[in-house]
Image 1 (cartoon, one colour):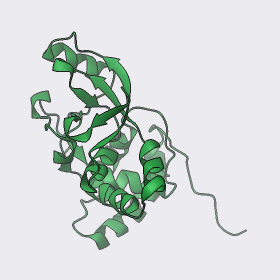
Image 2 (tube, helix red, strand yellow):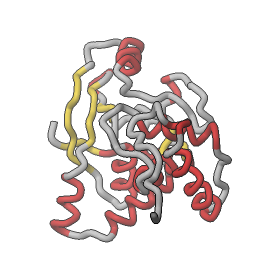
Image 3 (cartoon, one colour):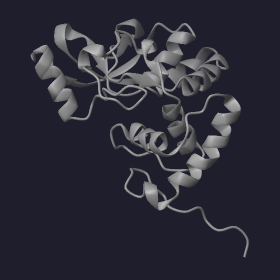
Length: 201
């Protein structure tokens, strides 16, 4: 598998961070020609083939959605597993066992696998998911290869911080989230880096 039509990509999570997607949209819209082609090539979507051969994304939902929003119809893909032989129920149990799916809504409630949207751009917005990405980008924690790490950080912020209702509130809460990410409360999460270095003498 070298490429996949974005309209055919099935999501394996219920939520995404719309703010994070819009940042990626702005990035892709700033590129043209070879630069855009290279940027797309750098983010192949890892997929698992499921029932009826459908490609299920196990990462890069935000990238796929951003590309769709700027009019890109297909993207590079990497086949991680072929589970077409499994029944619908066996497929989702296997995905769950491998931590290749995250069936939780924006309130952190577990839902049925049948609730998964058909397309990657149909996911529910979760500001805490965007918060997790922005805190990572600001150095609050490091990116790792641990599956679903951003969701674990989002759940910490969901538990401890109020839901941002505006852009100003988001920026205020982001500062609090960075401090929280550097505190002992986050010590067990993937990518934890500890306290910020002290300033001055």
